[in-house]
Image (cartoon, rainbow, N blue to C red):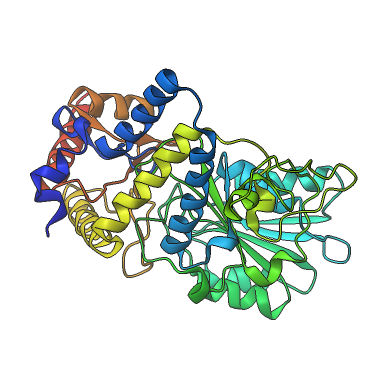
Length: 400
């Protein structure tokens, strides 16, 4: 199936009838399936009251679906409110007695940098090395030189939110593991774009949300922790959903969730990654996230990646043709495998993005750059419309 030419499929995304949407790195468009599921839950809640136990099972099913998407196991997955909360939860469980160094990248999304800087400022870490990028990517040898036997954690994004460069995750984890360091990965700009397998890539910890290329809602994310690490990952903070014998564990045993009081003389974490699930979830958001993953898995992640790759090739070729080769921050396919983001430099990015919006084209502006991020539902015509609009705006700027 050619996903983008299937009108029934494109009709799942109402905004496509009113705009050319090329900003999935900011937020993907929610499908009708996702919005309908969320709306039905809200209406059901309003008319019939809380259906709490069913909502808790949505959490269980979300863990299972996410595990399937990343090549992990359900017991290795926890459902959290956001990637930032998830990363902080993971960081709270690290043992930092003899190893107090973190190596990270200037291409990471800010959370996966400033989290570690704050820990250093609080005296929990001694050193945070932020690797500088060169023309939109961090060379593998820079990771090799910086990761040493003092390193506790290597924090890296699968794909840079800014340049669109795709990191060599498998090679980075191999370097880290040779030195006894753990690797925590932010997969937000990779999942549902590129083939992803945590076991193949040797990932120790991972966090990812749903509202970008998964086309789900804001307000939910998942964390993954490799099973053999869980017993030693004791979070410094815990909530009632994260303890051993929590309400979901009781439901899974066909018990009344409140059959006996919860232990108040200790805070023993769940044996699974549920230990990072601190408190009660937003049920409508969890339902929407689960539906987004079901939709993605039904379509197949491979075909989605194939369509995104086509659009990226058309985009790069078209922008180079109108003279923007040197302005591109995103490495070429010869230099980097890439993903679903292409970024090029401009003056006054806000004005440039606004001019595109006036022509019905939605992209993002970041730090004097324009960031374009197509999805499987975009067409070659969408890309051509963007390229011609960019050409006109550049020409207009030159004639001022």
